[in-house]
Image (cartoon, rainbow, N blue to C red; front, side, top):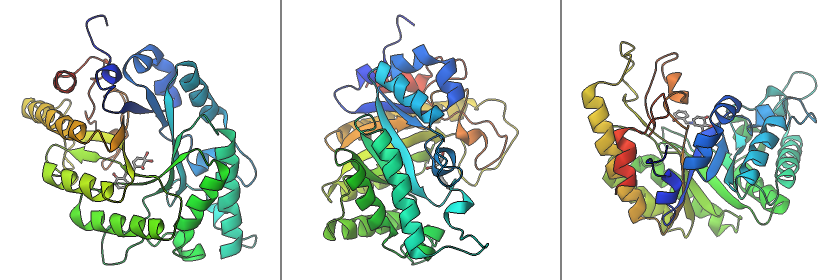
Length: 330
Ligand SMILES: Oc1ccccc1CN[C@@H]1C=C[C@@H](O)[C@H](O)[C@H]1O
C-alpha cells in the first residue's frame, strides 16, 4: 500500500472523507479503513430498529464498537439516523390494543429514543442525521405521508430537532435526503428547512445523500442545489455518495463486471464530481461514501436484489480504481 496515497489526507484541506460501514466490513478491513477515511457512518446499526428493537430495550453493541473504533483511530462519526419512515419498528407507532398510538405518546417515544441515544454518544458523535427523507418525492405535497407525520403532524420535524438539541447542544444537527439535486425536490427541501430556520428550530446542516449515477443528476443541478442550500447559511455534508453504473430505470442483470465504457464514464464522472465538490469546500465539510469498496455496496440489492454494482473508488479487492487516481490527482 506504500505508493497509494491516503484518500482523506489528499482531501484534508477540503473536507472530512468518510465511509459507511457495517460489522462485517468494519472488522474485515480495519487498516484499509483507517488509511483512507477520517469519518465513519454506521450503515444500519444506528437506525431505530437496530438501537431500540423493542420499547425500552436498547441494543448498543454494534454502535459502541464503531464509536470505540473511531475514537481509537481519531476518526469522526456521523450519527445516522434518528427519525425516519424506514427501518423503524412497528411498536413505535402502535398502541397496546393493536391500533395506532396518539400524538403525545409518539412524541414521548421519539424524545426518549433521541435523548437516550444522543446522550450516550455525546462528545463522540459530532453530527447527526436527525430526520431522514421526510420530503415527498412526487406530487405537490411537501412532506412524505409517513406515520410520523400522520400521528404527530407536520411539526414532528421541529420536535425531532428540538429534542436532539436538548440532548446534545454540541452536536451538529442535519436534515438528510436523497434525490436532493432534483430541482423540484430541492425546492421542497429548501422550503421545509427555511421554515425550520424561520421558526427558530436548531438545525445546522443539510445532508445530500448523493446516490448518483453516471449521468444523473447533472453537474448544473448539483451546483444549483449546493448553492440553494448554502444560501440558508447551513453546513452541507455529502452523506451517502456512490455512483451507480446503472440508471435507476436500468434493471439489467447480465453483467458480471462493469463494461469498459461504464468504467470510463465512471472515471470521468468522479473526476467531474470531485472538481465540483472541492470548488464548494467552503460550505461542504464532509463527504461520506455509502460503502468502503465495491466488494460490498447496498446497491448490490437496490433497486434490483442480487444485482452486482461497482459504485465506489476501490474495487472488490480494495485496489484503487482509475476513479480514485482521478480524485487524488486533481
Ligand atoms: O436512494 C434511495 C432511493 C429510494 C429510497 C431511498 C434511497 C436512499 N436511502 C438511503 C439508502 C440506504 C440506506 O442505508 C440509508 O440509510 C438511506 O438513507
